[in-house]
Image (cartoon, rainbow, N blue to C red):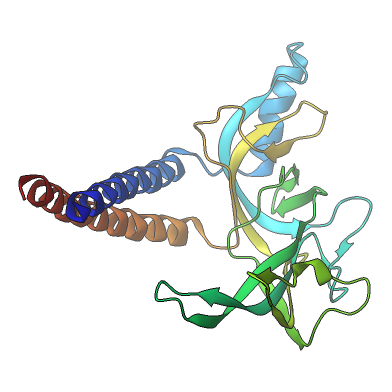
Length: 260
């Protein structure tokens, strides 16, 4: 009986792999189809529409490439290190061990972790190319491959007022806190960025952000377009071949399990 159950699970994983491959393919094709436009050309299109009485109506899905620039209110400071940036993400992970009862009845101590803080900046910033400046609305989307600038592990239990709730108890056996791991990523001012999104003038100045159509991807990356395309091809192949292999094995196990 267990063979056909495992087979069905593998078939489901194979289908998931196929869908993931299709997602990578769609992402790559979106990058191929989109134009990479200078800010000055986008501004010219916006101005033309505004002159025709359609101010605020400009929409264009495209790519822009340039250097990250802080918000007019000034750069952000990463919370853990104080590093000047336009975007940051910080995490705090509690690492601990706890007792786990095995199927044979024996107890085994296992190391586990729990994320107790995962905080990302929400403030917009700008992108500057050789022709001009455009606003960037990240809309909560984390950039691809930000710079990891900090990772620190502090051994021992959390102090008073800390994340003591993360210390667990399992079937009456107390967990042991191993320590806290602090990590931080940033996008610094001047970092070259590739952005695929929708440029609009809803608030007046040009801003690139998440497309209004859910079928269009929104990408902010420190990698170049070619690097992203190459990575998408690799993911597509891996998911496609891996998914096909899992589906075939799952089908065989399902048939054998049902026959036997």
